[in-house]
Image 1 (cartoon, helix red, strand yellow):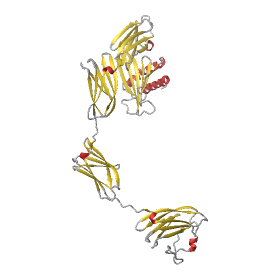
Image 2 (cartoon, helix red, strand yellow):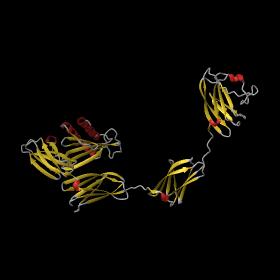
Image 3 (cartoon, rainbow, N blue to C red):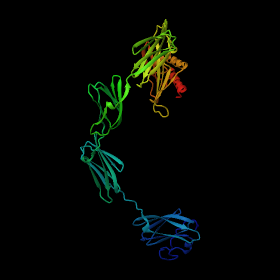
Image 4 (tube, rainbow, N blue to C red):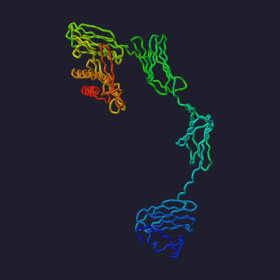
Length: 527
């Protein structure tokens, strides 16, 4: 017998007799072993299975109350498993610590100390959740211990859902939905051990109304008015405006979803304005939510108009300058000066005008734009040099003048770059770039850069592009992650003309204009 082989030696009664050894081991064989497992607490009817050192042995107790097993094991800790089967099933592990020269290692395992490892009896349906008090038109959702089930009432006054649950306490939520209305409830369900089927009753009339609120009535009141103002209120992007009409209070009604909203109010009387901001939280559906702002607490935010000045420079001193803006023409002689200035008061918006410089039979024409974004109290100045204007002497065809070109680039999604980039170059040789509605960045263009851009923007190819007839850039363009729109502002015989075209994915003059604007942004602003 190998020294490294597991030896399970059963007693051989014909060789030696002895208590607890129904078959009786040979003393010669036992002497070759170095480990002993003693199993006690038996009734004599069991069957024992021992797994140790990679081998399995099975033996019947055969009336014995104690069984002994002998092994030849390697030195060290040897762990095995014991299973006893009879009128039950018991399982456990054991260890034999073998040390050479220290005699036989012995360990004892009593059946009473082993764990009961019988297969559990299968669970039967033992819980019924009953939802009653229904009208028959509802749908029911029951969530038991995180598991959701739904069922329609289907004309019945109750819905029954059957569950199989181990004994314990479980969270239960019940939702009854009927059209837009909803009723909800939370409960704890106890499933006792060994009890017959448990019925848990949920009555719809006992549930709370949890119908979601879709709108909250909100009232914004502006007080302290003189009666001759106009009031504008903006709540969450919804703008309402009305005159005071002789009253000292103006009220504005909103229907809003629950939540917090930024709001603003502007009171206007002639060129004067008073402004204020507020935050309103719509959370109470049972009654209107209100906010009141008094005109006396608002901040005076300036006049509605901005002072603007157009200066025409590069004159020889003997010319006459005519400027047309807002349908009116103003004329002024140079009178020996190199420049002539024209002053205006303008409202917010883009105001396009034309310039005509004349001297005897000579004539030079140009265009300009006052782009009033907001009223700041600062002078808005535009300077146009006669050198950038075109010679329009004896012109019998349409006079077309460059005013401004805009490029709008929109990215969706936008990760590293700006979501929106607006680039504008106007006839005063100024380039302005705005990234995501941030503070505009402006820089002056040199004559060579400006002339190259205007020449391209006013070319025959550009006319075809902005007319929508360019075969290299057919309109409309397909949807794309990046949209690039060019807008050309010109005047034709003094009449403003605005033309827009989508050039994303095109060939020809459209991409050339975008590329030139991109180059100017990089060179002059590092963008």
